[in-house]
Amino acid sequence: MKAPCQGCDKRLIGCHSVCQVYHAWRAEYEKAKAAKHKETSSLSRSMQRHIWRKMMGR
Image (cartoon, rainbow, N blue to C red; front, side):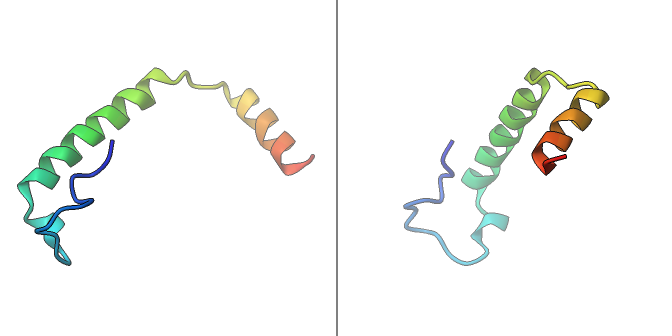
């Protein structure tokens, strides 16, 4: 999802605080991000430790 700001001719420094289009996009983006996070299965604590140790070379 690309932000509507890219290529916007009304873009100014700090415009995100007042832009309604950006606020609507951001709300949808956060909902999609939360839904994606819910979909991912959580790993057990022991599996997380195993992966971490592999990454750290231990």
